[in-house]
Length: 475
Image (cartoon, rainbow, N blue to C red; front, side, top):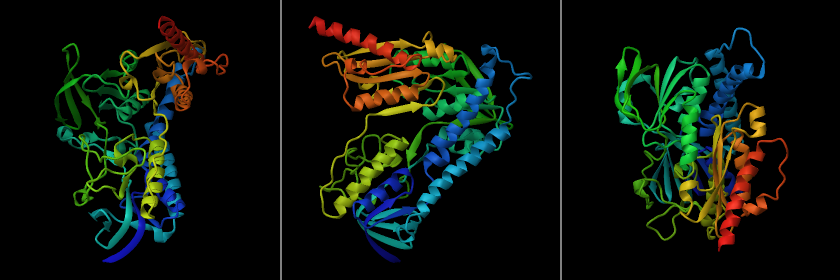
């Protein structure tokens, strides 16, 4: 077995791994990157990009369907070619993957190793039983995979995960989506708007990342105007009948339903790719949820040693599974792994204001830690509806609700939750404000053009500012 000595080994060549490699090299370390599968990030292959391609097709179909409300009539109605839709999804998806592959190919060949990596100890990584890599520090950036649940096995080959969907060559007639997370909501609505009969089943009443009960209830009601969405369904039967999956479930009112579907999409989230890495041969520690314990400001893992030589980034950390967060974590991990390897202290780095977007229609967005992270009794809420908001009505996008939160004592802006048109843009503005520690009063001094959707944000901020001023006057 060949032995190689390096300062930093990065396991995984996805978004986080590539960012870690660049950061480690930039910090002056001798670094290499190890990949056990195909090159191409989760985002490009099975995540952000192919899902948005499907959503873009669904949005186009929906826009044509809405045209008569503007007095524009399309003779013969809308005809959706599932084959053409999926041809474009796969073709453009492959282009995005190829961009990543080219980026990897630009890395010096001596810095790239192919094969599954496993730990022999904290400072030794064995690659596919043919190479032994001795390191000063290591970055785990192995990404994630769709969670597999034994309870779905009864439907056999009618079971798919989101990764499988993007290899379809045509659209099916019907899909049951089990799950209420981001992937479930985005794909369910897109498939529905492309002519697929969709039922979405969840447990516990949650809906994506939404924590604010008013926003959640509004969103549930709105989705149910399009397709069946049962956020607290109790699945009592799951099996096969000929070439279809059959699901029996009870709803919130005790009603029992039985559905027959071409596929069951198990959207139960994603799990870090740590299987087969022999983590037990290291000194790493896990948290109560079974994820690697780590410091998000340094990316260093928790260890029984005083100073762990192992760092973690991206989906492998199970922290915030978003591309921009993976890139940030990779940069932090790579830099600190290099510093540790070269004998310097690791440095805590700024984490950006939390920002999450779900690309449904209306979109869902969370700025800050969300409703559940707010201190009870210490904040006020400003509300705005988009049902009568000028620009939203002009575009026939007048569905939505926005809540902004402010600190009763300081007047600081604390975050927002929304189910609203153009939420991706509203949320960016508010995330910048949050990171810059702006007060609600300061936010209202910013320019608001007319007529734009952002005027709805101003309405919510005005309502919030009034409550904060009232609370201040009472003190």
